Amino acid sequence: MIIDHEDISKASFRRVSFKTLDHLFLSQVEKGANCPPFVSTAILDVAKRVYHLHSSTESQEQFKPGQYRVIGILSSEPAGKALEECRKGQAIVTLDAGQEDREIRARFGIVALRRARLLRICVEACEQGIHLSHEDIAYNILNCSLRTVARDVRYWRQKGIFVPTRGQQKDIGPGLSHKVMAVKLYLERHHPVEIARRLYRSLKAVERYTECFARVIALHEQGLNLTEIAFVVQISQALSQQYLDLYRQYNTAEYRQRLDEIIGKARGDLRFSKDADAPKKSEKQVQYGPQSPIP
Image 1 (cartoon, one colour):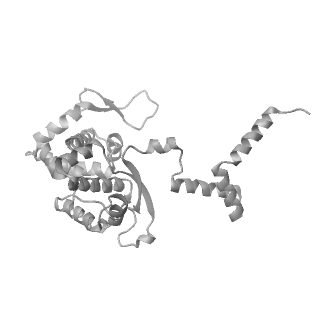
Image 2: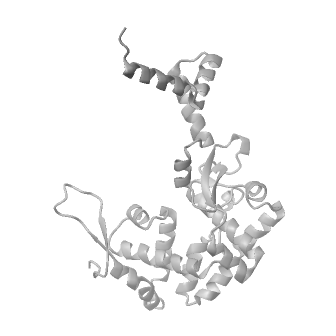
Image 3: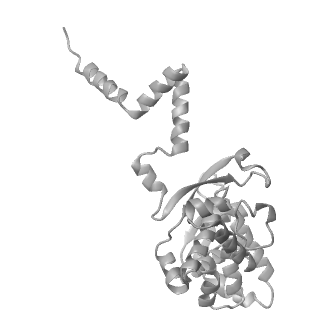
């Protein structure tokens, strides 16, 4: 009798694979629901997506320290629709921003930190197509009362900043995002320290918003469309549009010098060119460096 060691190896591998959780799940579904393997495999895939049963390496790549996953209502769901009938989705939000949050707490106190976190979490979820309810924020995220959440949302609205929650969806007024508000105040020559105090932001965050605004406008001046700008700067198209609207509002004789001061460095650092030798590339390429902008 000839022993085929390759067959023995394959059989051993099959026996080991039969002991995995995946195979246990598949066998239970196939026996319990009397369904073929391709159906049970599809069910397993759905279960993994819903419960995020990824490998530890995959999970670590998705999250940064201080981030976690939340469940909310898809922003495409109309206002007034019963929550139990709404489609739900998931978003990754930043509860603890590390040094930035520590700076906010040290400078402005615990209440300011909570308000800053509430605003950041709602904006991040909204940018991923999810609206959180006041209950989500109070009970599942910030561990505070509903009255506290309502009061904090009202606080930001009084400052002209819109907080994108499920409850506010039907009343999206003229409020700006906190990022656009920070740039607006900077354009009006408010000191960065004052802006940080008014919006409960760190000085680095205020600087980051201003630099992002400058890059958006510099790319717009070079003829890039909204989709291209958002892709290059790595922000949402909605935020890109708000920055462009702000630029148009303040592109007047009174503020033109201030705009040039803010956008000047970005104009020098960003240059777009098309590689003529590349085989039919439709996407523009970014070149970073001290080159002069393309006229």
